[in-house]
Amino acid sequence: MSESLPSLLLIGCGQMGGALLEAWIGRGLAPSVVIDRHRETLPAPHRVVSSLENIPADFVPAAVILAVKPQKAQPVMEELAAHRPDIASSAVIVSVMAGLTTASIAETLRSQAPDATPAIVRAMPNTPSSIGRGMTGLYRAPNVTEAQKALCDTLLSAVGATVWVDEEDQINAVTAISGSGPAYIFLLAELLEKAACGLGLPDEVARLLARKTVSGAGELLEQSPEDAAELRRRVTSPGGTTAAAIAVLNAPANWPSNIPDAVAAARHRARELAS
Image (cartoon, rainbow, N blue to C red; front, side, top):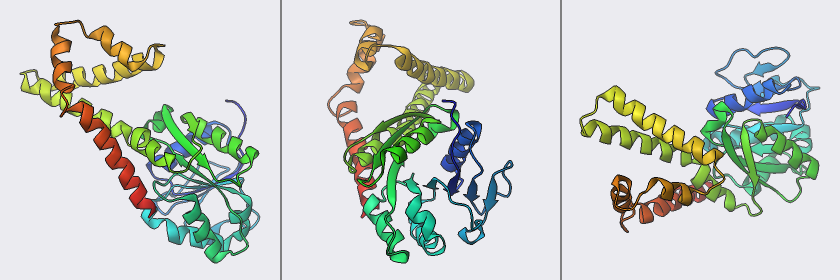
């Protein structure tokens, strides 16, 4: 992707916002503004300010990226609508916050700018975005134009793959699978490392075995045309060592029920955040 990107307003520059910003700058981001109280400088021609009041009056971005914690979002959105209703109405609003619905975001913005008709896209990237290997699910409100959708796809494609869903509640499922998913994989690596230590292997050997096995299997899955089930079968010789382990994991009370239950719990929590 070689095209340059238009000016953006990024509100919040933590782990995810920072990863996105770094990728966008690398793609030729037009002069943009970042609001963050913890960052002091940005490479020219970009600017960092501490509040919306400090945004230049003539700065009108193509998109606003809301990358703050959901619990802190309402006052930020109210401030945006109050101080810059022109931006709230003209730019596509991209939320990377879990839980908050397009309706609740629009309602908050209109509470300070009643005439605003904000175009809102929800995006759920994950932490591998920090190395350009992210997976982002997106949903657009009905009034988002095709051009705005294309811009959002370009922005999030800068950090990995993208997929659009047709129903907003499906973003909660995306959150449970790919948004939270890296933590599941890291937990697997953590548990494999502990198990290796329990079998008497030195700590550094256990760590290397666990990390390289997880990362190597992930890369093989990425590059292989076969699905995960077929790749698993290829490793699992009948009556062999892998088959013995898989039999334990596939016991009805273990992975077959625990993984769906875990994912369902994550989706339930995403829905709770929206209420």
